[in-house]
Image (cartoon, rainbow over all chains, first blue to last red; front, top):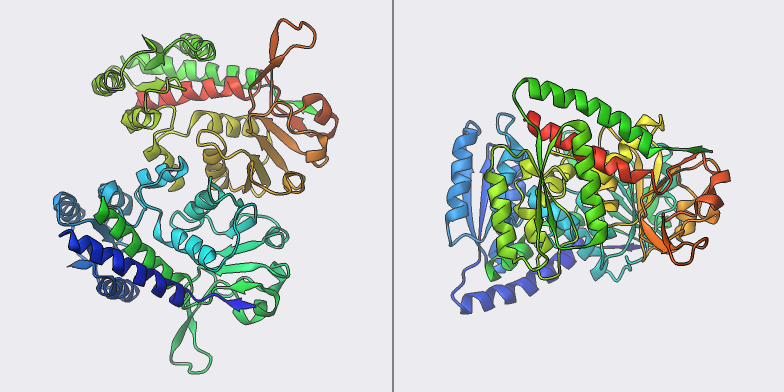
Amino acid sequence: MEKISGTQISNTIIEELKIEADNLKAKNILPTLAVILVGNDPASAIYVNNKKKACQKVGIISLEKTLPEQISENKLLNIIDELNNDQSVHGILCQLPLPPHINEKKIIERIDPKKDVDGINPINIGRLCYGSPLYYPCTPFGIVQLLKRSNIEISGKHVVIVGRGPTIGRPLSIILSSKGFDSTVTVCHSKSTSIQTITKTADILVAAIGKAKFITKDFIKEGVVIVDVGINRIPDENSPSKSKVVGDVDFEDVFPKVRAITPVPGGVGPMTVAMLMHNTILAAKQ
Amino acid sequence: MEKISGTQISNTIIEELKIEADNLKAKNILPTLAVILVGNDPASAIYVNNKKKACQKVGIISLEKTLPEQISENKLLNIIDELNNDQSVHGILCQLPLPPHINEKKIIERIDPKKDVDGINPINIGRLCYGSPLYYPCTPFGIVQLLKRSNIEISGKHVVIVGRGPTIGRPLSIILSSKGFDSTVTVCHSKSTSIQTITKTADILVAAIGKAKFITKDFIKEGVVIVDVGINRIPDENSPSKSKVVGDVDFEDVFPKVRAITPVPGGVGPMTVAMLMHNTILAAKQ
């Protein structure tokens, strides 16, 4: 019954990256990340702010482009083209979601794969399928690092991922089942029948469903490792006027039965940011 | 205990495509597939010949580029560029494997995604992960068609795929677990522990391992559907000087226990060719 601290592990990674950033600066390379934020979504603003703070800690220049909600798709594409062509920019991140009048896929595909430090351009996901990604997508890569740095063996283990989304479930299933990681991976989703039968066979269970406290002790076997990727805002029972963030796992319910579990908040979240920093340093090296 | 005939189903598809090709011709569009064959590999020559024959049946113009084993990577890239720019060519297929002095990945990535009727350019595989592929890769798509046209339900079923290669196991796992197909998918491979425990839970078992007769009755539960993707050449016990082709499944051993099974040859093989024709017609329509 161990609580895996993503906050602590991500801090270690940030410290390691700081040394690498200093080495780059000694060679007159100033690692630079452009962060595009469109509109006024409060959650997005928090995420972007967390990324900015992490840049400061590592020593990465963060170039913020805060754009109005009404910006046209063409203008946004032009801004990306400028950043693609700007030699001083190593990584480009466009905070999602984008307003509905903008085609998200078009934007993602426009970011130069070499600067796609978020690792979500289809060409980078495709290369991931071939086992040779330029960058691993941040959240799945953060999960792998969480497990590795907590000395949790993944090779040969049965990993059950609940969720098949393109940013987490899908790429994570590809990474974990590929050579060098070597897990046996099952992907479940909303159309899966008898989910509990399958999740109970998991050595490692990843919850990326988007439903608050969906996974209870009835879904797991004794000694499982759980990674909770959910971020769900629910009313705070202690102060009804406020809300709080919980994961896809009912933490208190499962805790006595698990070998280890990541909390929400303080689990996967900070790891995503740390991996973005990792990829930006990698981009600056190339 | 049904034997699913890929030969028969592919013939039906070819007939359907012939009508579509005729419709295109009535609009003065002549569907054209360029097929590149490098060197003298006898198996590759057979595959290319099968594709040529299928083109003739459908009414697709097949433009063959037979190139010497020694051709340089640059020359091959130039040929692909020419075909990319040739408005009369709708699809480009480069028969794999290529000689070792040529970087296969570089070649695959060079084919214009719009003409990548084999569906193997990383950008098309990446789009597959996002649920919006231009073309489904031929062999995985052929398997899906085999199942659908044999009235085998895949939604909600547990599919176990043994094999994680980039042309079959990997993309098939992505397709089957995505929206609209909705299977629960497990990918096993050479590093998986207790494979038999997992394969025995399969409603549908796909064998894409490359080991002759690897799957026996001990790997399956009663009433499973098996898709055998293996193509293994072994000595023919009836005439020792000759060889014969067998799949990854011990057909005779499993047959009494299965609901349905695809044979080798005559199962997945002809479906791959039919899907290449399907994608070429699709390319010509666009």
